[in-house]
Length: 351
Image (cartoon, rainbow, N blue to C red):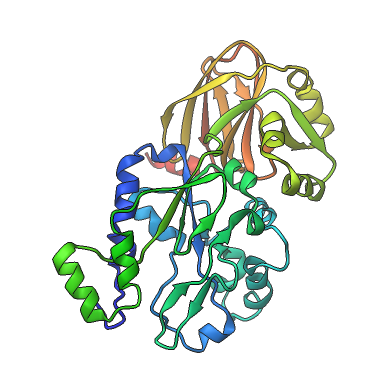
């Protein structure tokens, strides 16, 4: 443990995160989001501080998949979707970060485009002279970020170093919260002593469950059409949870509209079950006999392909601008979605 009281156990050995992971083993069925500390210019001058950022990718060690985080090769659709999540643009930290830091760094890997983070509002924590960050006031999440869109993005849990106020979120119990709060700005000797006596280590975290979370994959028989991506994103920024549930948002395309004319007239949702999940292949079983659109909230790519159990190729489209959708005819009950980029043939040949 360093003299600042910080070490990698803050990221990799947090009791609350371990408990959350142990209680929620279906890692393929939901995502988490971390609320990052916003580092402004004044803090940079006194870096490092005694409270490192949560950094979404560190949650992967617990098995979580994060909606936010660092992406070395982000898809433009995902970037646009995350920007739509921001409420009050451009007055909140994610927009400020884009404006200031995209131009500040010399190397592409530090560009804003790769940092799809959700930031705390400025003033949610205060920096003391000793370098310790203390929560200043709770975040009112809906004033900063669009919760319906994060629910659509399958975010079931929010992990934050500051408290959050929202009627739609429930704080999860933490056996170490009181102890870790007392140790938040203690000396490294006091933190080390408490670690050896009780095992408490790391920062106090506020973990909230989102009760409005969308499933990782779902069906919808209704369609809402838009002329341009900007028009679609503007709609999604103001759409309610019920709006997003009632109809899938798509960009108008004559060929696609003709293909899907039968879907748009159907009003019956089909139940969908995931049968098997791999990194590059998902299998589904659908109950019912009506045409539908199956949305999988993974990033859309033209290299996603879908095939029914009897070998028919199915149309794969972009739904809600950023996600992968499959047009499912009435007589298809089993299908597989798989990733097949051009280089896959080369590796298949080698194998």
